[in-house]
Amino acid sequence: MKKMAGLALLIGAALASGCNSSNDSDNRTDTTPKNVIFFLGDGMGITTLTASRIYSVGEEGSLTLDSLPESAFIKTFSHDAQVTDSAPSMSAYMTGVKSNNGVIAMDGDATQQDDCTQSAGKGVTTLLELAKQAGRATGVVTTTRVTHATPAATYAHLCNRDLENDIAAQLVPGGAGYNAALKDGVDVVLGGGSRHFLPESEQGKRRDGRNLITEMQAQGYQYVSNESELKAASGDKKLLGLFGSSHMNYELDRQSGEPSLAEMTVSALSHLTSNPKGYFLMVEGGRIDHALHDTNAKRALVDTIAFDDAIKAALDEVKKSDPELKHTLIVVTADHDHTLVLNGYAKRTGKTRADNPGVLGLVKSYSDGTPTLDKQGNPYTIIGFGNGHNRVEGPRQSLDEATVSADDYAQEAAVRISDVAGSETHGGTDVFLGAIGLGAEGFHGSMDNTAVFTTVKRAAGL
Image 1 (cartoon, rainbow, N blue to C red):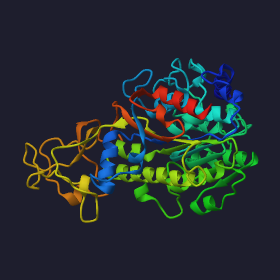
Image 2: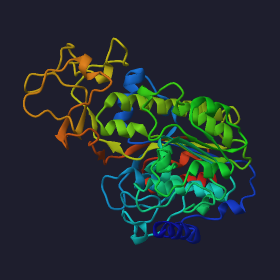
Image 3: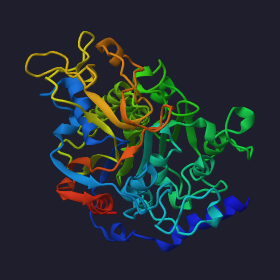
Image 4: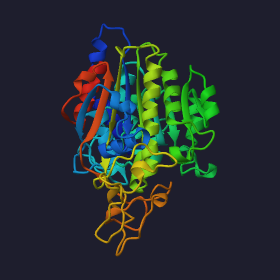
């Protein structure tokens, strides 16, 4: 109870302060709806984008995100770290305030602690909360657990990203720990992570005995757990979709019955567009980041392409009612990058096919096509990582393209962090942002991630 009481105080501080919100929307005479779709590729650095483009369409091809007319480079450092984690980087986009690593949508005084009642700082109003205040529809779509750091930064305030049971409670209207700034609740929530909504007695992670799914159903939500149920969902009720106990599968491993990110995005839009005042939707390609932590380039690139497919699906859907995007802003960016690099003077590979590993293959000389060798006389891959778990100590084995293009291959790293997959770190370089539609011209040059909040807020009239 002490933790819940402290949580309520933190949320109350965000509401009472108003933080960085304004009443601009209250003074608007324009009745035209204003919509925002904020796409976030978790860990999707510029090198990952380049590799994904080559993987999918070759060096001369273009992805959907390459077609966005406005662009900027985004600085990603957090309040306390040169290299950020997802919690403060997404919080900066959503609130315009720098948080410390590990902290969800709180100011720089809050530090990551196991007991948030002992943490200083206060919550900071998010773009999603501002949209709710303006009477607009809201949605969160992700391939991770919906309580994971990136989606949580849109609707929750907490000193520790790992307290996912507490984050889940902030979604339940009227329940203990609810974030009252969400008013009647986030209209659409789609992703993984049912374990943080269910008690231990029902194969969940909750020790308080609460079943948050049934609590949300009692508050007017319809609940879906597979692709067919999602397609059949009513458009006039709030929607909770949890497609797995933890994260959803990588796109490379997606099973029958599990919706794609593009399908979830279109479904969310179909539910949100009926609001005459507009909507705010956040869509995360979250598992790009996880594959990169594993230095498993193939899954990272395939998930990046799935993310790009979701962008195309959203553009096609929105243009049915807003063909010139006069009322809709679409922003695509990343929260941070990783240590992925493209090695050597490799000849052009073209896109990856069954008979061509492409960018997943070995470096071959652009002059004669022979494998480029390291100092020990062994070939090496085009894609490598600055750090990770697969660093060969001593003589390297001789690699072949069948090995390095396999689904489970983990690219080699320059620095060995540990023996365990998942140990590769984020990188600290700038990331790409692309935008199209209402107010997109506000994105240009080099921008801090906090300035993205200000630009979106202004364009949306929030």
